[in-house]
Length: 420
Image (cartoon, rainbow, N blue to C red; front, side):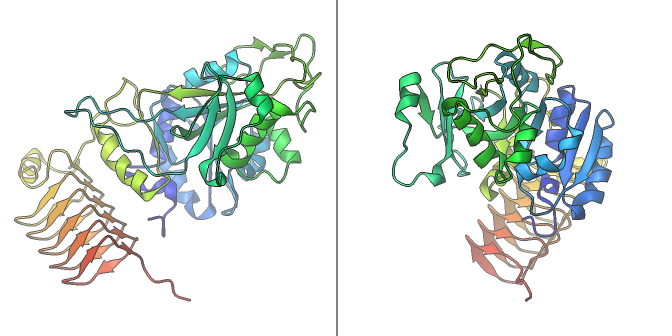
């Protein structure tokens, strides 16, 4: 799906993925944002961020191989206070100031947004259980109040059984451990964590290395870590991202001596929307969920996704007979006689021939579907071509892929061959 396009520029329900975190930050009152990207995407992202005049965007080019913690090292000089990290593939309507309150009140070193398991949609009759996306899962341990983060470890790193240190269970006998929560990749860190990263060069990933490191240090290590600031008698946190000073509590015995204690907290998002495009399945679900999402008054996307923005009222009425009302369709759309599109998301400048049947599909921009083709449950990359009389079911097509005439595919990943 990302062949020839940066992930954050993939379309979701009529907008690039990057639109949603930028809109989220704008809606929450942020003024300064650092966007980090690879060199090949710089110009396109630079043009795109002009749509957010309320944000002062500092676009930084980083190494294509750099991981998330490496990126923080690269932009350290541009960060002067506690800071928020938002993944470019996250879509959520969380109110960030609630997360900032958790961070400030607890004088936390690190605060993590966790999403609770999805609830049944009350608008769907019967309220059937929601099947979760099969993305990377974590074991998460919280104290009995559900605020202090005590344990986090990727499920993939646990071979046979989960082991929790005995002394941790003695200190927190009511610790709750689950693997049903989603790490949303939205974090708040104390500024001094950047000094830690400068010294701990082996930490490359925020999720799998930095956060677990801080959690472990908060629980078990009595020695200060590199960058950990000394605790003055009248030390007061005046570098909060929300600008409200908070007095730091004195360290308990075994909690860092004369240094500011390391504390990791979490906020559990139980209502609203929160999802990441970290798998093809999750990306598919996003495209269908986002246009229908109706929680709250400040969602970071249009209340109702609009289709046929370039069509006249008369043209919209005619297209409405062939395109279902639940679809989202981009501008430049052309459809032939006796064709139908149902429960699908269609990008810009997509051309559909005559007698074509499309159901439950995602078609990215500049794709053409020839006469008599049938498609169900497919994700089609940008600039693809599907030949006439062909049939596709539950297939994923990479960008610029061409399906030959009269071809039949089911449950296939169709990708261009890489020339050696």
